[in-house]
Structures are given as C-alpha cells and as structure tokens.
Length: 262
Image (cartoon, rainbow, N blue to C red; front, side):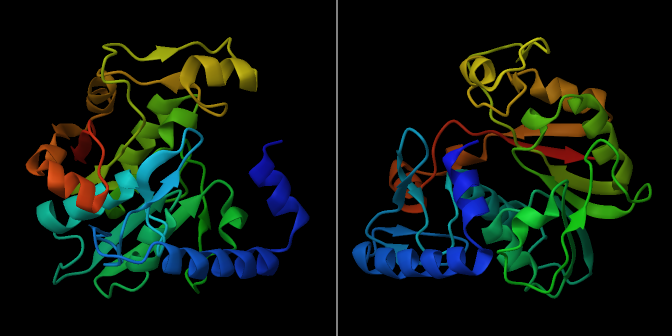
C-alpha cells in the first residue's frame, strides 16, 4: 500500500482537512509573489510549488491545487469552447473530477454537473452538496445521448478494456456533443504499448510509468478514439503560448489536447 493511502486510512477526513488547510496557509505565505498566475483560481505567486515523484518545478497551484495539465485545459475551455459562459444549460459528465474543476463547475449556473467515479468515497474531502455518482466507465449508468460535454482526463490508462470505455463515452454523449479525453502519452512512440501479462505493481511501474497504469499510449491514441466513432482533433493548443506565458501559467510541452466530437 502506498504512503498516501496509508495516511488516508489512519486519519479521519476532518483531521486531514485541518492539516491541509494549515499547509495551504503556510505555503500561501511562503510563495507570496506575482511571477505566475493560475488561470483557474486567478491566484498569483512567485512560483508554483514542486509536485510529483520526480518533483516537477513550477507545477502545483498553492491555492486550488491545479497542475500543469488542468490549467492548460481550463484555458482551452475558456478560449476554444462555450463551456464556461454558455447562455444555455450544458449537461456535463465528468469522470474522476479534479478538485479545481469540481470547485468551479459546481459554481457555474449554466452547467448541469454530474461528477462521477468508480470509488466516489475517495472524494469525501470535497466540500460540496454536489453528489459524486458511482460509475464504471465500461458500463456507464446513463442513457444514450444524455450529455452535451464529457470530460475524462487521465483515466483510460487505468482501464483494462479502454476500447469498451471509449464506446461508452461515445454512447452517453449527445449527437453534436463534445468531450476531452486526456491520457499520458509518449510522443516519441508511434504505437501504444500494452501487455496484459504484466500484472505486478513493480512491473507495471517499470513498463508503463506508474504502478496502476495498464498501458503506455503512443500517437495512435487518436486512432483508438476515432475507431470508437469520435471525430478527433489532436489540438496543439499549447503552441499558442510564448515561453514567458508557459512559465507564467505553469504549462509544460508537449501536450496535445484530444477534442472529440460526436
């Protein structure tokens, strides 16, 4: 069992919340400045905090906890879609809801928000009256053509039958709807690497980069999504930004955004 899981099992949610609030207040003071800006919560700091096993620099927003990929997607929502400012209701399905997104989507009047996960209890520390629905991505408990927008980021690399999951994402999306389905990608790899015989955590971490991943996606990821029925744009949105802006918002190249339409 990983250290983070052990800590969560040992301490009640309210104790963890007290500790996290204490750590956040301490970091807000330590990182005071205006060199970087989170596009989600609009907070400014001298630098974003390090994050990850290999300690990526300028990665985590001290205020809302957003990471490089979450901030990039938020800019994409704002600049390339009407998700954040539509005049009509948008039915949004969101798998494994990232907390910075969850916090904002629950506040937006134009969004009918349905966050979901196979293990909804792990989100008990989210402070909201919005229910997180229990949902298996390979057997989504909603009718065909239900949602205008579907978000599913860094989930499919954990799913043994990702093609079935993609088919389900396609099924519940309305005709004319769209979604963004990000995964970790090795941009130097043409063909996705997967081997179902690799089952131990140590072997999976060595082969796929993380103990709970079951494949390492390559550039053929777009083809997989298209085979499920989606029209896919692999959008190199990040190229719109200068080096100064990349640092300011804490973005990291390369990062294609997989915009999928039905």
